[in-house]
Picture 1 (cartoon, rainbow, N blue to C red):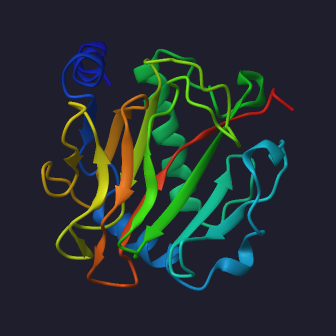
Picture 2 (cartoon, rainbow, N blue to C red):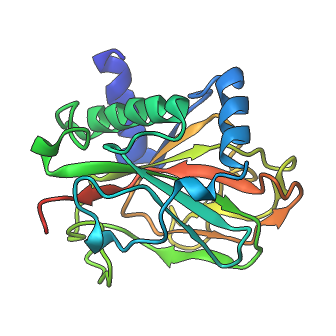
Length: 234
């Protein structure tokens, strides 16, 4: 990516919208593979839920199911043998893209020398309540089980990779950002997005996942998020 293009992306995230969308980050063929792979019967490949503070280099991939058994999050660390090589490779690409935005070394989060470890979580929501309550990260908010130090840092970026289509797999609700602090911006309705798109957004903006009306229970609101774990805090 050219330096000029990256500068435009940074302006859009930090000075304008609070987010930037990479259209078709995953092509149609790989998207189909990923959607089917992660909605098959795969729970036996993953350990039971682990707290963020329990994660150290070498910790196995794990899963949790809430608020119902149909709502899942499969969590893979960058050091794990991947269940799905294709998504694993896209996770590397997503992390490098984030590092470019934040101006960090390209290996940040991908090598223990950085002190951070990328984790990618494949999440499916079919429940219509509040699944991820409204909160802001890196905004001096108390965390009972933090991934890392959450002191105020407006430079931090989170990524959401969409694997579902609004009005096809689910309708209403989903991922919301409170960009203007009054009314949420809903991705899929207020902002057109499609399965395969990657949203890079400022982590300190309040966000929520709620109100999903599932149309296809196999997929529902399916997406990947990319937290980073502080491996120096142990």
